[in-house]
Image (cartoon, rainbow, N blue to C red; front, side, top):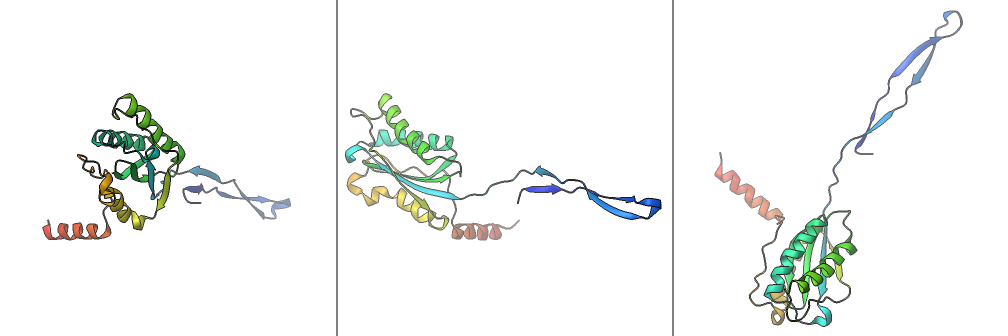
Length: 195
């Protein structure tokens, strides 16, 4: 098992027997195991979507700014990272990188329930309260498809132009994962610059 290494015991020899016959008996002390710190490498990506109750156009620029800050903070508290956020007046799309121990039902309850309660209490959604529909959609995303999904999420205002939020430019992604081509081009630039 990786990460757990045995600390080898020692072999000892004893000579026993009548009148020094030299019979050799080997005894082995029990092995002791010690835990060695190990890192878990993971690349878990999910695309999450939820809508306003009855698809009512409740999201405006003020609510969108509030949601961007609120959702990013809650996601970080739940050991995840927002890679892309897309909003139109009736629904929200998130692309997240999550930790293996992240509880998705808990995360979504905090995102939806918390934003509705705080957004309404602090009057970010005025005059109507911020309300979300029951349920949500969640799809796992392969590492190879992250860039395509990121583009899709960030371009929601182009996919639904009639529901675009006026005065709300999509925010820049928090944690950009460079594509293989971008890494290659960056390496070429460094080689040209030289020492």
